[in-house]
Image 1 (cartoon, helix red, strand yellow):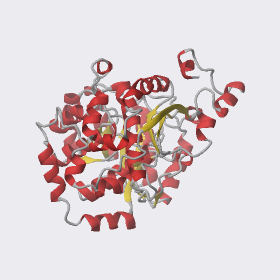
Image 2 (cartoon, helix red, strand yellow):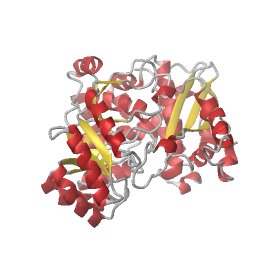
Image 3 (cartoon, helix red, strand yellow):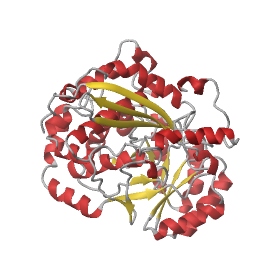
Image 4 (cartoon, one colour):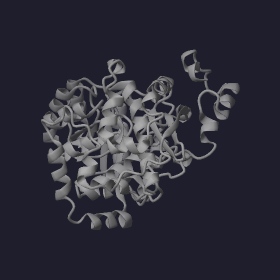
Length: 457
């Protein structure tokens, strides 16, 4: 697939908005550590001189989004006045440039707030590319020749696990049957699990009601938040197990609440409930701690899932090498956009670890479906034991929302990365001046922003 023609593709504008939704009001998204999240994002729009646009975002939980917005503005100089076709012609080189500025890399490097900002920009560039080709992002990736796709990836720091040549060969080996797999995805979709039943802030009555709802929608995999109080966890997980029956699957997520020893003991006590995996049992940076937990829980047939807050491909490399994850949970906005995410998929495939993406926050379900569809068609060739997380929130704000039927993601059809907000969403929910936020401040429903949060007002 050739790079788009350069004519008219000079990027003339990069705009970024702080967009927040008041999910804390009803306990949506609540877990052991994130007790009152307002699901939010830094929302990027890039515009070329011929009027083409790309949309990208990075997920946040409310406060702190203003920091990501400021960093994105600091990174504009790497994008504005560049020709998009030139970026795509050397995408790996561009990615290294925007992540490797000799001064700004000090506040990373390739991690934390600066990497979240990079992800939003990179996601907008991929969205633009897919729109230029008039394809959904997953088809853009599937239709690339192995050499072309691999050329978008910066392999620095990971060649001890996989090289460009090995990655290219992996993709070439999976070309047989690719068209059939694409047709299968279009016809059948991709399996999903739900976290919607398991938020920690939900009442027992609501959890039971939601279990019935999602069972009726065809779901067989359910995830519950744990980690604050064992007796409460056991009661809540037991209620979900009873509601979903003995033959469906139950996963739990501690969101980094425990020490290594705590995680092992807590999960041993929960093991009679037939737990498929424990997600983020301890610090997201503790590679060896996760490996210790995984080894201790293997006799109980409990796997370890992690990755939603894994900082970059180097950390993923170590998790994959050490046995610290049996389920690799890439996040579409945590590390540096699609380029870096592709490298994680390739390492996971070589090391035989299943990828089950993290999703649920603003736009995450919309984005990760594209990545997992590409993986099925072009790399792993299977959905066996693999799932996409599904949370039924904020989809109504997108022009191309994900569609889940009978517990399966249906293949996106519209061009792009499914990241464009509907007209009016930004005007209502931009923080702090959007009309909905102004109304909630006036009525005392939400607290007024603090001084730091007013920086982008």
